[in-house]
Image 1: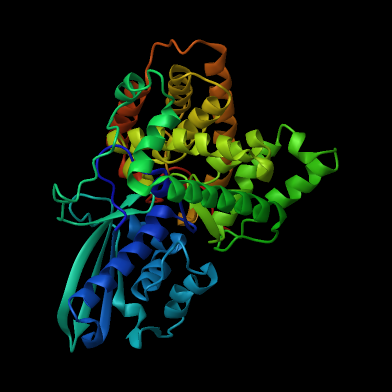
Image 2: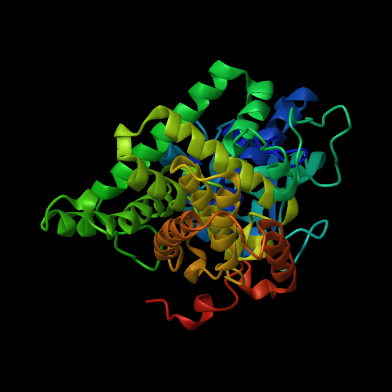
Length: 449
């Protein structure tokens, strides 16, 4: 179960390879289904099961269909994992159920009536929850409720890790203030590396970071060539490939100012199509970090040490945000998703451009500060409008934040810890209508054609 303990979240967990369109609504529920299946097997009950019930609560119910949540849960119950599953195999099961067909999970029939949507229910006070029930002759064999925490992280409701399960980082910190105090003679990436090496070992960490970057590059480049219409009733056309071709007519498209935004759109179009992406730190914000890295590091020709420094720096900043606020749109609005990704990208970019830890912190704070209050209001419950363009704009903001920070010496009035706490408070005060329920904002004011 992908659950973090303490503040630092491994870069290999914060950046996980999965499928679109949502880390909280697709990746998390798929993992929940797989964990439930494993629990059945551990108790020796799986062979007895002759029926499943799936109940989606809160935001998972409100926008679950557009995010592919039922498909994801079914895939997890079949034992598939987001890191390795073929997206084409995962998607399409809900459409079959709605058409009156039966879907089978290890020979057990699942029907449309076995899936319930409860958008106004909150389990354990959380906006993203699902309850899975396994039956034998109509008697309940196992029932579990899981919370999808954002970024693909899940936990079983009501179950807390024991002290023995807690991972104590080699170099513990919870706030940016604490992290900066550790950076006397070390970089932020250096602190993150010590923590990750203690958990994974050096070779595994290097391979993992390489795999994350390779998946990011592949996603950008697929998105730059893919054409057509994105799935869903909005019939949104892909634009990245056409925009890239238009830039190429002017000369080298990678040198164009607009290329950064096009890279971000390419990734988020792949995500919206349900393709393979890197959660960074969520799927809805998956385009920001890859776009900034691809643009700043020269694409696939990037130096390995720069890639690793960028990802590790970004992971340290993302860990602080996750520990003290949220990276979930259902909890904090889009400020928690795209805002967090922008701060992580600004931090990573500043680090590889020679910034001091204080300048890195300044860049991350600028990025967060100018996303405060950003709502999550996807039209039609789809990760398309305004999500795709929003990633493009945030990538440009990350670049601006880094440039501003590097013009100074790291001295500034508002610290990242203050900005993160402000984001937490803002998300807490924000109406649920603007937190991935599609009940407010653009989601209700745009006429769906």
